[in-house]
Amino acid sequence: MKRVNEYKKLFNVDQDTNLKQLKTTYRNLVKEWHPDKYQAEDGMAQEAEIKSKQIIDAYHFLVSIAPETKEANLEAYKNTTSESGIADFQHKGLLLEISFLDGTTYEYFGVSKTLFTKLVNSDKQYRFAKRNIFNSFLYRKSKKKLELA
Image (cartoon, rainbow, N blue to C red):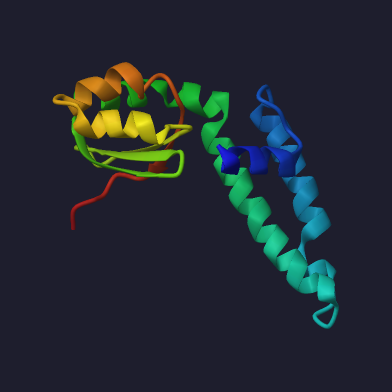
C-alpha cells in the first residue's frame, strides 16, 4: 500500500482518476522532469534522470490498478481465480504475490502477515484464497504468462 500511496501522491490523483486524466498528468510530469531539459554539469540532470524513471514506473503501475483496466480484464481475472489453481505464492511486507497454474501472476496489496499465515496453514489454500483474498484486496496482474520455448 505504501507504493500505491507514494505513486498517487506523485501524480496527485485520487481513487476516481480515469486513464485520460492519468495520461495527461503523466505527460506533464515527463515534460517537467525530462533529463534532456538539464545540462549534464547541472546537479538537476541526475535528479531529473531518477525522477523521470520514477514517473514512468508510477504511470505503468497506476494504469495497471486503474478501475478501467481492471474492468477490461475482469473476465480473464475471474477465469484465472476460479478455474486455475495456485502454483506458488510469496509475501513481503503487505504484498502477496500469487502465481497460478496457468502461468499468470497477480499481486495483492494490503495483505497482512496474519492473513498470509492463515493462508499458509490452511488445509485448502486455494479455497481460503478465493474466500479471503481474491476479491477482497486491491490487485494487479504483475507478470505475463510464461511461454514455453
